[in-house]
Image 1 (cartoon, rainbow, N blue to C red):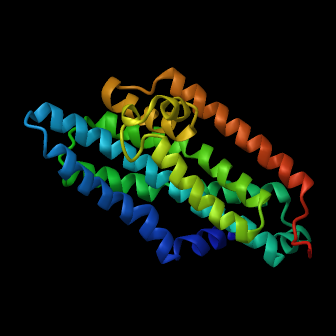
Image 2 (image 1 turned 90 degrees about the vertical axis):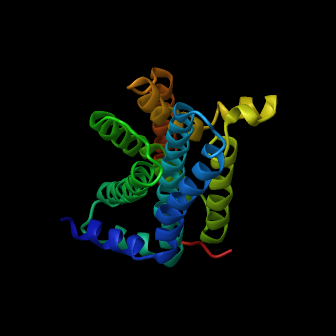
Length: 248
C-alpha cells in the first residue's frame, strides 16, 4: 500500500466524529424514518417500496457526508503548510491529489454498506443479490462527484470558512436534493432547484437500480457531468492558489 495513502486514510478514519456522522447517523436515520413513515403503510408492497426508497436516500446521504468530510481536511493541510511540505518532497503533486481522491472515495463505502445492511437485516428490504451488488457499486462510483466537490471547496476556501461551507453544503444537498423527504413535497420553485442538484441525481441512480434494475441514463449523465465539472474546477483552483497560507 502506498505510504501516503495509508497515512491519509488513517488520519480521517480514526476521527470518531467522522465515523458517527457519516456511518452511524445515516443508519439510525434509516431505522427511524422507515419505522415512522413505513409504519403508516398497511400494504406490504407499499412498506417495501418506502423502506427501499428511504434506504437509498440514506445511503446517498451518508456517502455525500463522507466524501465531503474526508476531503475538507485539504483546507487545513494548506493552512498548516502540509501541502507546501509535500511539494518539496519527491512525491509528485499528481500523486498527492490522486491519494486525496482515493481516500475520499474509499471512505464513502462504509456508510453505503452499513445502511444497506440496516435496510436488509432490520427494515426487511428484499432485493436480489445482483441488485444489491449493483446498487452498492453504482452509489460507490457516483460518490466521486462529491469527492471532487469536497476537494474543490477545500482548495478554494481557507480552513475557517471551509468547515462552515461544507456543513451548509451538506444540509442544502440533503434537504433540497430530496434525501430527507421526497422532492414532491417541496414547493414548485424549490422542486426545480432540486432537479439541478447533484444529490438528487445521485439518489436517482440508486432508485433506478432498486426499482428498474439499472440506473437511468439521465442520472448517469448528470453525475458524470458534475464529476467532470467539479474535478476540472478543482484542478484550476489548485494551479492558481498557493499551497500555503498567506498572511492577511
